[in-house]
Image 1 (cartoon, one colour):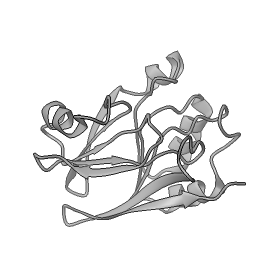
Image 2 (cartoon, rainbow, N blue to C red):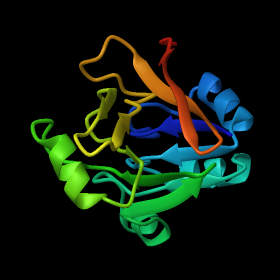
Image 3 (cartoon, rainbow, N blue to C red):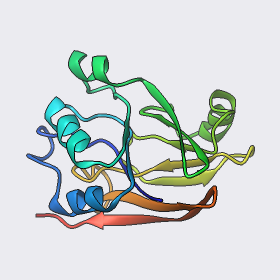
Image 4 (cartoon, rainbow, N blue to C red):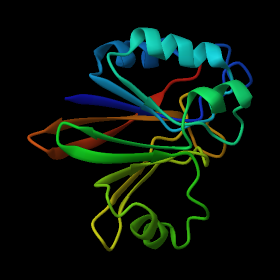
Length: 166
């Protein structure tokens, strides 16, 4: 099972649309996980139409319509791996310990908010993944997203992919 992890798309504030490269990944993925800050409902509509399966949450920049349509926290099992998805996890310091406390029933926590890619394992064995942003690089050299394959209940290699500007 191929997964696409994205967050902080901020359409149309940071980009007019999702990059074509990301849409190709949407079409190839068995499931798309979006960790919030969509900004507009049109992006949610697009991903609902194009994705085989979409798991998403709302973020701090998402208004009433997105908050009505999406949960603050999503929990889903994909390919035998238990995922939790949330937008914000608080400061980087202590993140892994808070994640162990707050998501004891998950194998992987996908989060966003910072636009900074993150891939760590907590003391309790929880994998924490932040895909960055495919549209707003903030203090990063490039925009990014993640792909990962899940096979036989195990997370395969996580790949951080750059989105070239323009």
